Image (cartoon, rainbow, N blue to C red; front, side, top):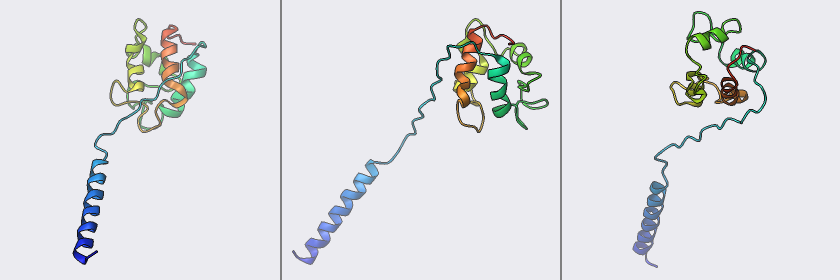
Length: 135
């Protein structure tokens, strides 16, 4: 094989590699939503939700006294959620708190944390569906 043929062959191989690489570029990011696990037990606001709020929401600069509404500190969380119209007992899936957690309203919560910590989406939806009791 002559030198010019080798150069042409190498050039052809490089062109094929470049075309294949360009064709494999990632143009769109697909986000796969976190699916909440179905909750079949009675959800306790104080025992199930407050600990999750304390860890993920009622932290410095977020949902605390003087921070962003609703105030999710233990002493204020229930009244803030119910009184602030964050809970829709008639249509639980349309509750503002639930829609923030599943990302239907932005910014999705908890902000800057892993999505759906401790299955908070499923627990919130179950709690609202069960009557959003202060239990």
